[in-house]
Length: 283
Image 1 (cartoon, helix red, strand yellow):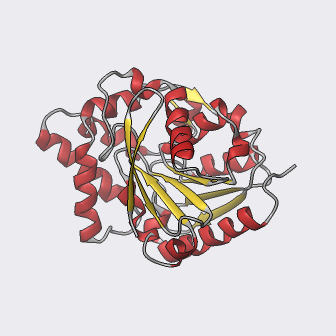
Image 2: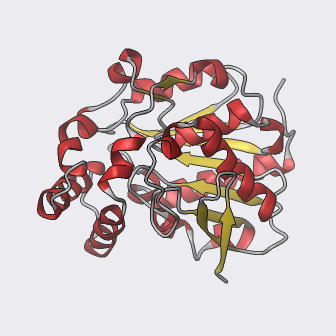
């Protein structure tokens, strides 16, 4: 059964948060990527994951049905992203959730690890996840997708913007996205204002120091045909977190949970089982 929450973050930004699954089940907090929304995870809903786990899917600030503040500082301050995650944990009373971060939201997950306390989490999942942005090192681990298509994403003109979004989605995965998913994705990408896109890209940071101190169970997932973030970034994350499990998806682009949903769902279930039945921390 779907429950909808309005969560107020530390700066007053209202976040739209959806919840599925039994209230007393182990929680998984699932963060979407740049331009996306909670519906990114729709292929993780409705099956065995939802029966066994409490799936929490927010629309990030500036996205979907959440507030979209105009000030660039609303998106460049890591404490605000950390505060968003903390507010969700507090209001929904999430105990030792797995924090699953796809793509851009890897930065938000790192913000939480930097500014809050990782012992509040039961595990960390980095799905095609970004941990660096706006630096020379970040550029060497980024693919062509963002660079090529950003002008369209940042355009104020609607026609140019939609063309940019469609080009982005057509390149996002290695195999074609089914039409019903594709047009839904066009819609929620278009909902994010261009000023939010610009602000999200104004960040400049590197989280190697934070990831090197991760001591909770960690699962790293990456497609070997990812045009947005190169597989070298996932391998780098694995080198920083030696106890992490690295799961490479062959012939898969930037959205493994969409392109190989059955494998992804099975591996997420296995990881969640490990987190909630095994030791919480790795020493």
